[in-house]
Length: 223
Image (cartoon, rainbow, N blue to C red; front, side):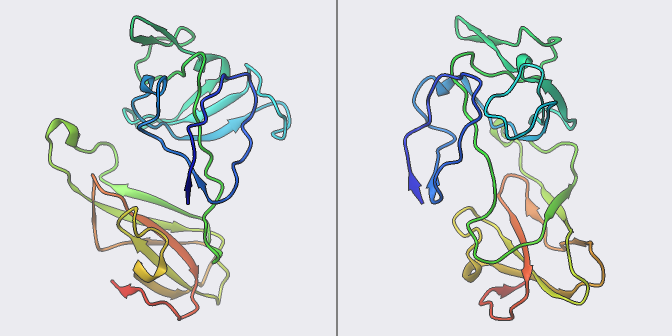
């Protein structure tokens, strides 16, 4: 992967173009004005009356996002995302004042689109739920992390096809099948499947799952 300079440019309503494959962008540690940002907010949906192929977004387009202070999704117009910064303090003039709302620097905006995996093996759609899910200890304030139980939800399976579910517990090892843990091999009986992993992971850690067709050629350790 290649590290490239931060994409610092004035926002003009343009939809960013996809970077070349193999490039990576830093999330933290960017040069000013990136210091205005203190955490990553996942945007998970877009609602628009115009084609999603449009090169420009509109003020009345809506996005769906989460924050790290709430368990609920937030539906926001693009216009409401523009923040104000005075004397080192930020505010969101176009919102109700709810502290859960986030807003963006009026001049600079940063975003990264996750469009897939750098993996030659085709994976099936997968999501993860955790228990407990409504809160977790704030380790930055000295609280101890807790174990989480993960349930993997698989979709797009083909009945009669053999699959393998893998797990990685670090950023460094992620998606390297030689360093993966083989969680389960199974033959699909339906298009969907839920699997609760008996091995917990820590709330302050990083864990990834991926499900691919089972070629029985893996060198991964079996859980």
